[in-house]
Length: 283
Image (cartoon, rainbow, N blue to C red; front, top):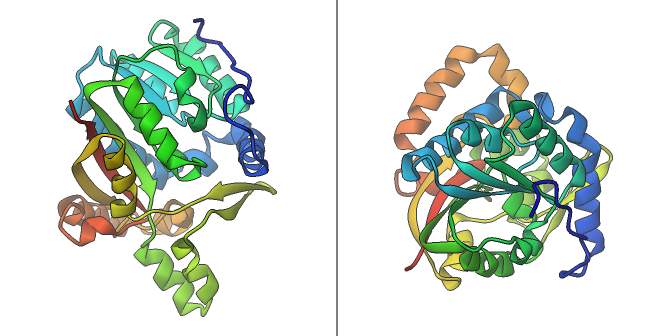
């Protein structure tokens, strides 16, 4: 199947209004997403930790699925290092940017792109991937994460890995920031049990937050087991506080060092703006 394949979004999963809202939101920001919105200095720190985990646990030459590839920054980075990446995203405009990135870099043979949502993984032509990764929370937008987990299990070899950074429920910075302002509804936002509307560029991204235990349990039921877990943006502030980070670079470096050391400790690893989890398909 060619790397510019576009599969009709209504072909398997009925497209709900919330899915279309999310698609339109990311379409609207695709042109500028490589800048401060989608790749500021704090986001780059998060990206680096997931990518380092991927290359530590899977050798070059491995076949990987990028779940929610965005503009293809991670896919290009891995393809340049010899990985075979199948990059997928629900936003056609994001996929267009990712495809253009692969073309400019001459990576078409190692970086395929598909306009597929997480709810359409069954339509990928291969079923022998060595692993998958998802950076910066695309799995938080999956309308039925249980179905995604089962579909992914069907696409991975026995022993295949999922490396995911997921937006968590307990962000200490957020609780402190909005609690001190008396904005209690905003401080409690992540604890809602259902999907909530998150504004993006005048549109809406429908998002559900997870604890690591909630997230892992869904994948365990689909045939995975947890390998590792650590907090991201636990002591380092979340990406939307980049202005603060730019004013205090030495403080951020010190907090990053502390987080790198303590972020995998019991209890601490349950918190953070994101958490980084590695799951392995039982074989």
